[in-house]
Image (cartoon, rainbow, N blue to C red):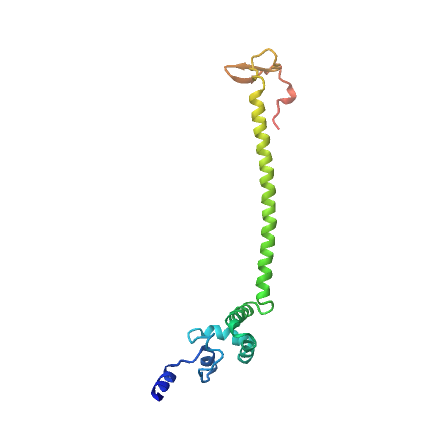
Length: 172
């Protein structure tokens, strides 16, 4: 029985917290379930922001079934504090909130443009529908159209230079 106990102690690796703090990690270590040996950077962030003793106190204050979520929240907050020391996770939250507000304004603008384009399309469709129901278009050679200074030769429009006003000779 003693040999099994010795073997278990020798195979027991210290958790990331005990490894970083260079202390002996026993079976009753509070941090061992939440900071395994291979996740040392996770504990390093938490330790840098909160300190090991404060982390232990915070974990012990929480009910055992909620401790894992509490540790995840501590890790998230610690990483956010390292990225943004002033605002931490609140800075990320406010940035996301601002992005949502900007996107809402853009969405409203797009919806307004869509309504305007639909109205424009409906007006064009109604014009097209009215054109098909109106009288046929008169031809250019029809006597009811006053051609003035223009004449029609082989389907092209030309002006009569004799009757054309002199003031219009200059091109602006």
